[in-house]
Length: 442
Image (cartoon, rainbow, N blue to C red; front, side, top):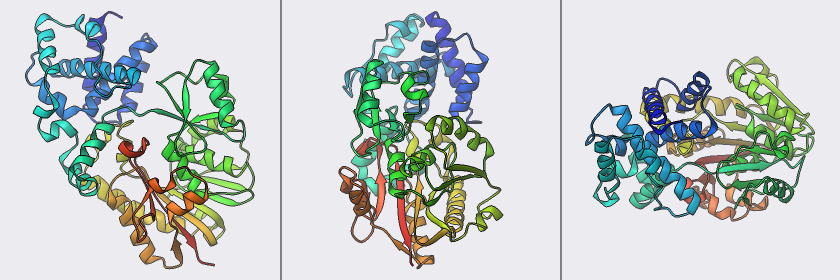
């Protein structure tokens, strides 16, 4: 595609995602369905440009003011340039690397080329704080309270980069080193994840869907942090286990593998559509113990009938998703304090309902992919206060028992400083995750 036509398409897509009427990934997918003539490279450029605009929206809007022409075109030019820089950083490993502007400048007028050079010359130290951290005002205060000024900026910089591609090796189908060797034969470089015993981190963003190692079910795409949540549940052979908010089933599949496809694993969700997305993954996985169940709400009669019968229950609660901004940067512009408050009420209700399933001696794990204390520690502490029959586990100690590498670095909070799992993109290289765990008294 000619550079000018590609830039025009980028501007069109940027305009669509900035309406925030639908999640960005859904908007991008729809755009590709409507423009099936686009090749893989064009699709990658379009998606990366749109996501670059979402990641650094305040900065790019500030820089765009000095340009001329349609706003969406100015933002697309700046997002395209940011995407080029991101590709060069991934290729070289240098955080300050800058990609070539030659292809992009082929689509620009002379005045736009001069303007882009001026934008490139702006130094970070000359920017105001909102243009450095690129976060909504309401989100800055709670993050700064947890991390301090330097930590906030480090997190913001991590959130402004795309996430690496993490894979979970399905222990039913392959060993990690064999899966890594199979990827290597396909010219895909990977390294073992620092904490999860099942994980591989892939270099770049290669196409996996047609590789035998993927189609056979030996690997699944899953962030390392998400793998650790499944590991923390510690589900065992022959047990009765529930993944209470299963969604598309990433954690369900990991839990089923730890159970060696024995026992009974319920995948509950209020969305039958999300559970449908589990089916092809389940078919590849080789698991026969997973039972997807669509429920009306957390108090569904099918839930009540299982009260007190579960050995393990995972509650991966609906949340703001603000720990996943590397993958879903539109969430920071689509969420707000009111929507978070509504989610907090749901989280309290869902956790209390799920707890009824746990039998005496059983384990309950509450998790989110949020970085906000009101969705995390506050929920866990309120639950513990209201349910004295659930004894908190020290997650740091539990992960160490499960032989997780550097387990002490993954936990924080509580009297001993290791009560909860707390993962941060700028510290651990994962999405932002939280987890608390309890054992029900015998």
